[in-house]
Image 1 (cartoon, one colour):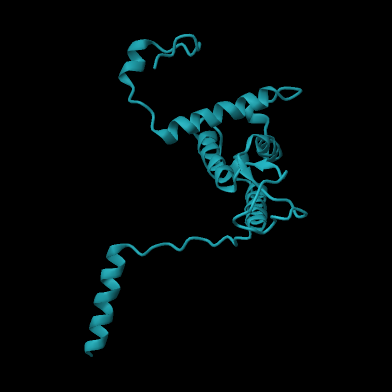
Image 2 (cartoon, one colour; image 1 turned 135 degrees about the vertical axis):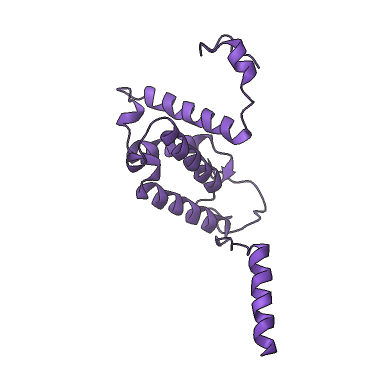
Amino acid sequence: MSNSGRGEGSSSAAAAAAPPLSRYESQKRRDWNTFGQYLQNQRPPLAVAECNYGHVLEFMRYLNQFGKTKVHMQGCVFFGQPEPAGPCTCPLRQAWGSLDALVGRLRAAYEENGGAQETNPFANGAIRVYLREVRDSQAKARGIPYRKKKKRKKASETVTSTFHSMQHSEV
């Protein structure tokens, strides 16, 4: 892909020498540019250095209108049903997992673009609270409780614990 017409000012030799970005890095760059554009469209426009967690929350709420996940409302006949039997008029929203991943990418991008870890608005506790509320409300709407995935033991830990239990049983 060439950068012509985008005004990024990189030479074609430099672009040819740089390895292609990973899917994660491409998405992170796209998300960062989208957030920057969102801030520029505010009245008055905001610089990234001026934004706080409130702007991040507004951005996530703004993105909700472009979601593809049906989230049943409390009064819907399908509320709490994991497999609804038919269509309804409930809104489409951003899935919790998508928002969580977005915040993770933007959190990393903020610091990679010169922001201090201590002032990172994407790392604010209010963002985690909002994500938890979204996760819980979406799980409730689907009738499926959210369960945190258990971390698997590493193979080396399993071998070590098996070895130790064998030693103790021989005593």
